[in-house]
Structures are given as C-alpha cells and as structure tokens.
Image 1 (tube, rainbow, N blue to C red):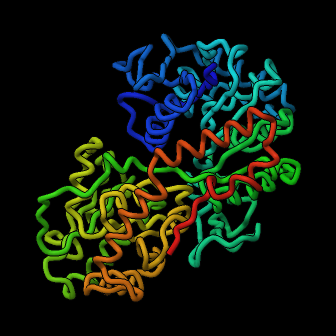
Image 2 (image 1 turned 120 degrees about the vertical axis):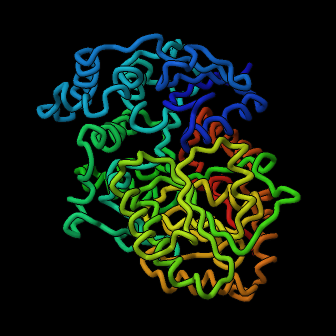
Length: 471
C-alpha cells in the first residue's frame, strides 16, 4: 500500500515562481515513483490557477473561495490561544498586513481527510496553523515540518556571517545581529504574528508530538532557528534533537550545459530579488574595480521588481552616476525555467553575493549548467567548496571579491584551473545534488519517521541529510 503523504505548501504546481515551488515541484513527483501517494493543499495566489490540478501525478487542491478577515482572525486567535501563546496583541489588523495568506490559505480548512493520512508535511509559516490543528486532532499523525527561512532573516534583522564556513558550535559567530547589535532585538524583527507561528507555535507542536520533526535547509539555518527560539523565550534543548538540516537538490537534466552558446567578453550574471539581503548593491563598485582589468566585462543583473522599488532606483542611479551604463545591464524581467537555463549558460560566472541565504538554489542551478558560482554567505557557503566547485566571496569586502574574480578570469583560482572548476561544478551537481538522489534521501528519512525512529535519523542518515563534496 502506498504511503499517504499530505503536503501543505502555499506555492506548488503550475504558475509558481519561488524557491518553495521549486522544492515542491521537484521532490514530490519523484516520491510518487518511490511508493508514495502525494496530495498537496496549496494557495490560489492568482485567480487563473485551477482549484484542482494534477501536477505530474501530485494532486493539488486550492481553496475555491476566500474566507473573510474576521473568520481568519478567529481561527488564528483560537489556535494560538489553545497552545498557550499570548494573543492580547492580536487583531484583524495584524492579519490584514498579510491578508490573503490567511484568508485564502492559512485560515482555510484543508480539503483532505487527514484522518486517513500516514504523514503530513507543512511548509513555512503559512501552513503552521493547520499543523497545530492536526497535531491536536490527530495526535498520532507524524509530521515532517519544513522551515525554509525565518521572518527575522527575511526582514534583515539577522544576516549570516559564516565567512570561513559554518562553525559546529551553537554560538553567535556565524551571525550579524543588525538591530542595535543585539541578539534578542534582531530576532524580534518582522511581524510578531509570523514570528509567533515560526517560533513559539512550532516549538509547542514539536513538544506535543514526539514522533514529529522539523527540517531546516542548512546547518547555519538550523542554528538560526534554535537561537531564534532562545530569543523568543523557548528552552530549545527540549526539541533540539528533533530539528535537522537537510539540503535541497537540482534537476540536472533540465539545468545543464547547452551546446553552441556563444560568449563575448567576460560576462558575470546575477539572478535574485532586488534586496539588500541578496547583495546586488555590491555590483557597481565591483564593476568599477574590474572594468579596466577585464576586457569586454559585462554584468547582467536579472531582478524582477517594482520599478518604484527605492533600492532598485538607487541601483540604477548609482550605475549612471559611476558611468557604468556600458558595463552593468539591469534586466527587470521574469524568465521561466527554460529561458533561465539559456541565460545562465550565457555567463562565465554566476554571482550570488547573499548576506542572508538559508539554503540557496541558484548556486546548484549554476553548477548544473557548468557555470561557476561565486557565492556569499549562509547555506551557499556549505554546498560550494572554495576553489573546487565555486568561489567564496565576501559581500562585505568588494576589493577581495574583485581580486578573486580576476584570478578566475586569468585562468586559475586556489590551484585549480578555471576550466577544471567548471567541470567540477557539473560533476558535483550530477553526483551529489541531483534531485533523484535527494528524493532517495527523503524516502529513507520519511520511512524512519513512520517507523517511530526519529531519534535515529541523525546517527544513521547524516550523509543523506547533508552530503559532502569529496575532493
């Protein structure tokens, strides 16, 4: 009999554009081939999305209608109150700050009969209200809960600082606390309601359900979550052994080197949000340093954003003021996945200078295309080995970053030829990060959960959770 897996993921199937959809659409169809029956409850974030969808065998259901704000407020209030979380501050206006996440998804009952499920897997804060409800209604239903980022990190209160790689100790060395330099204040960044879902509510769900676990997306992200619990007053030691880090994968058949791609000069690419956390602001100064050293240098910035975004306008203005219009091209376009593969293949180097990046996906996509990623901090630092299948750059030190890129351009970096690093990128993606291999890892892990062996996952499955590159 197939394992009945029910998934809560606000972005899934057709029309999805974010990293969460990339995760869902790559993993769950593959689990079908490994003995799972997968049904997903998702959000109707666009009117043209179907209420019911068959995505490569995964049945996706979306709400047929929204609930009103008062219903969303009542649902949220009652569940948080039932778990002993202070709701004195809560009002419909708090929910109105992120309205449709609640009125179309978080506060709408699932269309699936959870009493028949074997395993439930909710993703990110939008799904944690249902996670809490099902933990109460179905105490024997094991949950594999996923956290892909945190509200303080998204809002810029906490940035990553694992310049020399992620340390093993649970300390502050790998973090930049950006609100008055204070640990607690920095973790209080962002909407309190979302933080209440991510930290105290999730903590109480894990305590209520002994066989359920939480998966973060990198070692530094696991630390970030545990420290966030401490900042929110939770004694994380009570659930620390139920929080695991697990890396994502990449579709190496789709993201691949393309034949016949003509490159002119030396092109450096960037794909990401136009936001300080992504580090795009270092590019003008980087271009100014490198433009006289590298003939035919071109920076191609792909960032789909509101043209009134102040950060975007400042970037445009800086490029113009520094007379870099012929060197730096800002491309305010959203490319679908097929177009994205062509874009990546047109570059000599993929620049990912993130200051906060729990997992990172673009590094894997670049590697799969045989394009070397130059990566910043966070989870990017863990999957890329400096000098072997990528370059570690410091987004806080533009001169050092420029020198490393120049070394790569000249043909050698840290004792490896530039061509050798390119080859290592593709081989690493195929041997380690391919989604087929990551789906096998998920199958093993979920089998342990269903057998009640959560306490053995770290000991037995470490290599599957966090595979390492063999030099």
